[in-house]
Image (cartoon, rainbow, N blue to C red):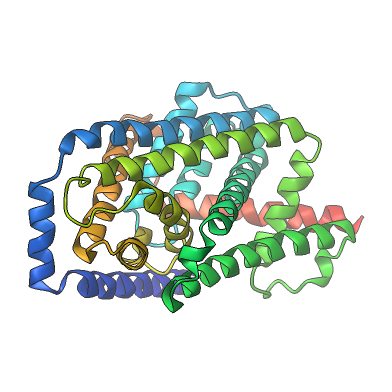
Length: 350
C-alpha cells in the first residue's frame, strides 16, 4: 500500500512539474503576467479573501450539522478549527494523506466513543458537496451549451466532466443496489472501489432517516459554491481594466468545469492543471490572453493559500500534546475505515 502511495505522489509531482513548465516556459508570456500584476487593482482581493472565508464558514456549518445528526457536538469554534486544519493539509501535504484524513483523526480524538460516526460524517459531507456541484455544473452547462460546443477542446472538457459525474453516479447506484440486496460478501476485496462502495453504503444507512439534515447540508453546499464563485470573480475583477479581460459571465461558466476536472488527483492540489484549464477555456470562449487567464487563476488560488496558511497557524496552536505523526494519522484512520467495511459486510450478511 505504501509503495502505491509513493508511486502516486511521484506521478502527481511529475505531472505538476510538466504542466508548470508548459504554462510558464515562454519568457514573453511570463513578462505579460508580470505586467498584468503591476496593473492589477489589488483592492478587489479584499472581498475575494472574505468570500473564501465564507466558503469555510459554510463548510463548517454543513459539517457541524452532519456531526450533530450523529450526536457529536463539538461547538462551532472547534469544528471550524478542524476545517481550517483540513484546509492546511489539503494544500500542503504531498501524497494521499489529505485534509479529510487529518480531520477524521483529530475529530476521533475529540469523540473517541464515536469514531465510526466521525468517519461517516466526512463521507456524507463529501457526497452532498459533490451532488451540489453536479447540479450547478449541469445547470451552467445547459445554459451555456453553445459556448462549450464551439470547439473540440471545450467539447472534450465538457465530456470529461460528464465522465467524472457519470462515474460518481455509478458508484452511488451500485452501492445502493449492493446494500439493498446484501451483496457485500460476494464482491471481491481486490475490486477497485470496494472500500469506497462500503463507505457510501454505510453513510447512507446512517443518514437515511435524517432527510432534513441532508437537505440542510445540500443548501449549505449551494451557498458554499456561491461564495466559491465569488472568490474567483473578485480575483478576475482585479484585472478587469486590462485588454482582453474576460466577462464575468464567462468566469461563471468556467469555474465549475475547472473545479471538477482539477479535483481529479493527477497533479498536486490541482496545481498546473487548474491554470491550464483556465487559460484554455477563457481564451477559447472570450479570447482572453492566455497570460491573463493564468494570472487570474493564480490570484484566485493565492486567496485559498492565504486561508490555508491561517489553517496551519490554527494547527500550530491546536492542542500540541495531541499531535501525531502523519504515519500514525494515516494508519489509525485506515484501521477505522477497515473496521467500518467489515461491520458493513457482517451487518448485510445477517
